[in-house]
Picture (cartoon, rainbow, N blue to C red):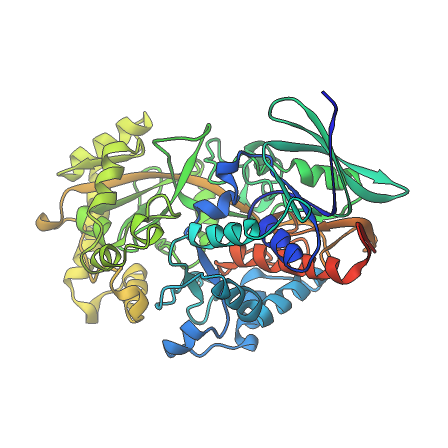
Length: 544
């Protein structure tokens, strides 16, 4: 069988959100595209398709309708401070400035014109622990979760295009970039069936994701400040995010920065319907749950509470000799506060069931806690502290959790609640009280909920591990999306968008992300690259 050869104005490698946005913008501008995706067609959209669908916008219509006053200056101040970007982060900072300035017209409004809608209540994530985070709520949840973003864009990409304008090929793995006279002119690879192929274009866009799906690379680039990586890591990304194209970019002269910066989560549990080895789910942990070390002692320096600083949670847990943790809560807390990130476990949002979604917000989620208890191998329940401690030890296979110590931790927390608001002296309770002042969080956060309360039983313990999600570093690109070498010179014919370029500049976020900036970053970088290529076209099939 002869080798398949594809030709177009632009070659896009990767069919995640960044690749889709790039291809759609190019086709809309009359530029022909070949898009190659390593996975099967049902995974078109990548990790974005499985995500919760939150996006970071600044001074959006949803914020203004809620009376939230936001601005470019405030958002940039928050971004640079929370990410701890240095003076050396020239390209990341330029991308951050541009994204903050243009997030509403270039991402939010662009999506809105294609039928994407957002919940009216803006969520407040990453408020900050020791380093201040989002000064105001900026996390906009998509009606339909990640699918509510991906599906309309895929429909638009397929609609009205001809074979001359767009070629989509799935199960096509790229093995190498092809160069001529120092310029990247395409790629070569093989299909899932073993057939070889080549693709040629005037410009090649890398949109193949980062390293979060490759636990070997995660360990290789693990930040030294966190100590050795955990022996047990969960994969919260997908296997296609293995860093292969990042390595190929380096082989062709690209500069890579900040791979030690990763967006991992602290509240990971094993998926009971795993897609691959070490498949993990990221819980949205309840703020009213007690977060405990491997021995069952409460973290108290300060108490750990979710949604304030994701990196701090990971750093604190990784200071433990055994780098995992526990959360202890009860059924009442679980129904009101517990969630799993992504569209898979949020069917009301994913399937646009407004009535069911409102009922869940008002009365809590009765299905998810039961599903976790019945299926998740990292969850145990009990009717007493002694029974809970015994089951925790049995689950982990040791005797680290002392029942008397665990009982004392719970009793101390509950006694603090019993003293009343005027005399409560616990940082977790103070943070819960502050969270409940914002109407967007009040319904989803319990008020002074004790752990040992007869009407709130049973007790629940969840063994939590670090779960990967996103790379924050990657190949360095200028603000046109051109891949740069060690001397800041563009590599002819090579561009990058999305996670593979750290969502802009080789690490737009710095050490921490303000959340919602991953999906938004994929769209923003993809559109920016496409605009740059379209402007630079000089003749059919060639790009300057």
